[in-house]
Image (cartoon, rainbow, N blue to C red; front, side, top):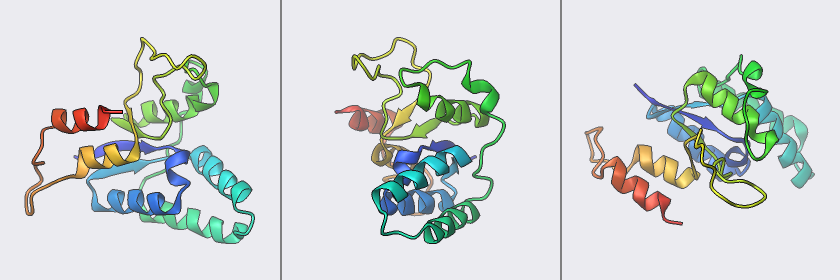
Length: 164
């Protein structure tokens, strides 16, 4: 069974990283999920930062992403949002979607475990989130050819990714 991950808008924003994450999802190693709200945020920010890009082209990119990853869109998470507490209230929809689909990780650049104001780590770690490079490495490699087992243990990879 594939590892269920939720991709946040910030990791879908850079085109090369978006391409890598979609390709990883297409291998079946992970079951990538996101919401329309996450895509709205991603593509709204792209248009704000890159006015030279045509909205029609970005709409097409969004459609191709959704077609490339079967069953990627998460729905029915909205009722969970108000029950969640995070340092940044605007991130609650991401956690709600992850809970809704039973995601084992949120792939993001944001640190959902830290208070945005103080930088202190929260006592209540409600989400497992990793930067994209660590999430991909943690679940996808390195692997031996012809085998699905990793050469490293999860603990080894987690230790490498936890180093700041």
